[in-house]
Image (tube, rainbow, N blue to C red; front, side, top):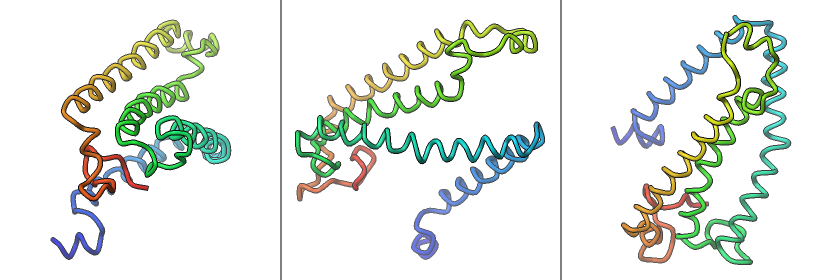
Length: 178
């Protein structure tokens, strides 16, 4: 088992989960290509990759750099310079914000009321509930994350983020090194 972990870099369970995710992803792509013209789907897929890498990634990287400066003081430009408690709070804001924005990205025509009238005719469903449901779900994500943050702070989660040598400790409560 150690030899496998040394060669692969993680446990066999990780490999099985990664393979399962690959199989599910491949199945989803096959199903998607069976639903419509492959060229349209390919254009959409390549366009979304380019939009993410050329537009969104630089934007949220700059936002993260700005937030790290706020959390870690004026000169902090990376995680190593930010306080453990500040990083903990930042991460508890980043996760629900990312999930909320992902839902907005996936369902924006319905949430913003931009879906055409044909949707209601075909599905028999109105797009009216999308905005309030997205707002409620986003609020619930932030509330849950805030409650988890409070529990972690009460239990001393931010103080355990630094090891005895003052360097970032590895573990589930510690912010990622980098």
